[in-house]
Image: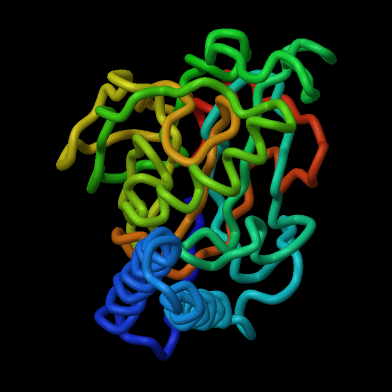
Length: 290
């Protein structure tokens, strides 16, 4: 694995964690005041204060290290860390840092350069989006149960697979529920509820790899385990803040997503695929990566 040092934001880890907690408290206060406003005259309008503070705190998180994280990432990016791909087979990229940074619209939880990928063994093999059915089983998606591989030699620092895999949110009504209700409630639970089941690897040189939305009960590693490049870690799932089974992968500069900044990556023999781009990773490539 090729790595290069990443500059940390001027914000201290303690300040970042405090800001995360303050944002959740403001959001919870707004929700409580919103409901109580139906029973107490005038309280509804006071609720806009914590809502405004929540938005301001979120804006501050997204402004973090903005100058260092501007522009797309390519294989030629000087600061990108080269690692192997976390999967094998044919996949399609979504929310890619090759098209915009931050790729998911936020720098929170170290995901400025995160990427989502979903399995498509053949064109049309992944269920489409529409009005019906309202939701689908995770097993209907080819990504569900796909192997997750170590992108480089490293040490497991976090591993959790106790959260359930939920139904897909691949219809317009389900997507509205996802954004208006589910995403808000999950944000109150912090990064654990957002990223769902996950595993974090320490790759050395201050670089950490995070795999999110892992399948419940599928992890084959635990904290402290030493892994080699290409080793099986677990399976792709649909836990946490996820609309369908997919792999959310990112590099960051700390083991704690609450305090981490995103780190650019490039996958060996793949690069950084653009949104909607399909790519194929052979098993032999994955085994020699790193």
